Each structure stands twice: as C-alpha cells, then as structure tokens.
Image 1 (tube, rainbow, N blue to C red):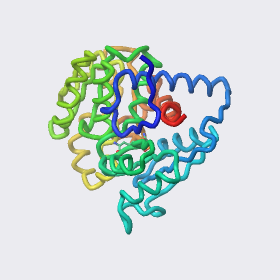
Image 2: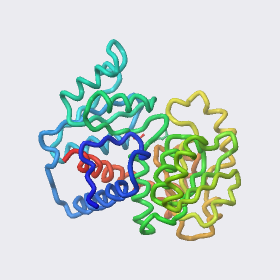
Image 3: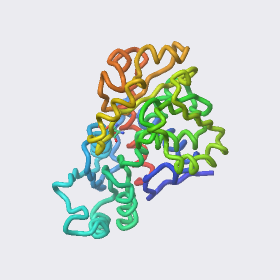
Image 4: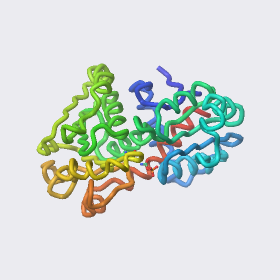
Length: 312
Ligand code: CP
Ligand code: NVA
C-alpha cells in the first residue's frame, strides 16, 4: 500500500496510522543520510512557512526554520507580539488569511484547540510544535533516536520517569501505542497519566502489542532500553513549581536509577531543555549513555521529513 501524506496536518499522532508514522521515521533516516553525505536540495523553493510561537523554543523553532530555509523555503517567525491571534481579530480570521499567504503553519502554544482551529480555517497543513496536550514532532525524534540505538522500536521498553500527565508523556503514549513499544510511566500518584487518553490509546496498543504500565515504583525501570524524563514543571505551569519539586524529587533520574535498569546499554533520553540537578543529574545527561543531543539533532531530520511528506 503506498502512503501519501500530502496536504496533511500533524496536530496529534492519534490521527496517524502506524504505517504513516513508520513512513515519516523512514523518511527522516533518509534525510539525515542526505545531510551526512553533504547533499543539498531545494525542495521547498517557492514555499512559505508561518511559525507562530506563544511559548519559547530553541529546538523546535531552529529545527523548523533551518530545515525549511536550507531547502529554499521562506520561514516567517511570528511571536504573539507580532501577530493578531485571537486579539483584535478572531483566530478563525487569522487562519483564513494565513491560508491565503503561506504553504503551511507551525504553531507552538497553549491550547490544543488553537492548532485544530488553525488547521480547519487555513486549509493548509498545520504542524503542532507543542501545546499543553501534545508534542508530536518531539516523539518522532525520540523514536528515531531509540531506533538508532536498538533497531526497530517494536517490543522495546521505554520508561518515562516524571510528570506522567504532561504533553511529552502524552505523546509518547500515543506513538508507543501505535508502534508497539512497551511504555512504562513511573510517577507519583498525583501525576498519573490522563485516563481518557489511555482509553483512546488502548485500541491501538491492542493492535500493535504495546504494553502499558503505570507505577510509582522506581524498580519498574528494570530492563528498560531507554529511560526518559522531562522538566518537572512545563511551560505555563511555573506557579506549580514548588509543589512539583516536592512530588518529583524522589523521581530524579540519576546514576543509581540508571543502574536499576540492570542493563549496561540502556540509554537516557530527554526532550530538552533540561534543568540539571532536578529531573536529571548532570552526570547522567552529560554521560556516555545519554542520547539527548542526538535526539535534539533528530528533531530537525524528523521535522524536515514531515514537511517534505506533507508539502512536496
Ligand atoms: N524539545 C523542545 O521542544 O525544545 P524547545 O522547547 O527548545 O523547542
Ligand atoms: N513538557 C515541556 C516540554 C518542553 C519541550 C514543556 O511543555 O515545557
């Protein structure tokens, strides 16, 4: 069966089949190899990308902007200081106008409903570069990195330690369910994953063979191919920082926890930015088992693959 993602948005990977996700991951491996060989292409020539940011970003902005620009496209960075986004003009009207001027839109911000509305009213592909609910382009890079180390992700064990309800953990649930990755979340009971999302993912997991485990017990890290963590308080949750430190302190990823995998070859993943000394110690993230920097680089290859698949 041939796969075409032309003109598709990526709002959440819930909308993508396992085959479509596989296609994007394989495409990303291909564009990374092109880059490593020094091959230069101009596949976005004549195309424009609106990049809207309500929240800060290093990796996502740089990945979209450089991937699009180096292929001859014109990315336009728009912060909320620059653009009417539900201020003075409805979101729907802004989306309609963007659809008349751009080839695609990247949105990073708070509400998932904003990316949904942008896609609905612009009529062009919209990419979710992180909302409070999902971070789909991140987890494409995460699985790519896992596969660079262990081969096909199916049947591998990925263990997320930290805030089980955040956008990254939620997106990992989705991609693991689709691809048959066994996903363990270790978190305090107060930060357990959203049961509604779990119910949405269960049918996919039944098809792929993915197993989910949610536990407060750090011993469950045993056997993990990869241990993953993220900041204790996500963007927009700054007021909750103190409470999070109290809840998550016992869940810091340090060398002692990495050792509890019982495997010398387990890798460490982090979407970044990291607060060293909180969710992860410096020796782990800067150590030999860390793949956080490959993972950051892979953001660019996966994002380029996504834009090539949907735009060219
Ligand atoms: N991982 C990630 O999305 O990083 P930025 O917030 O820097 O974009
Ligand atoms: N959960 C984090 C991810 C940052 C890439 C946040 O939303 O701030």
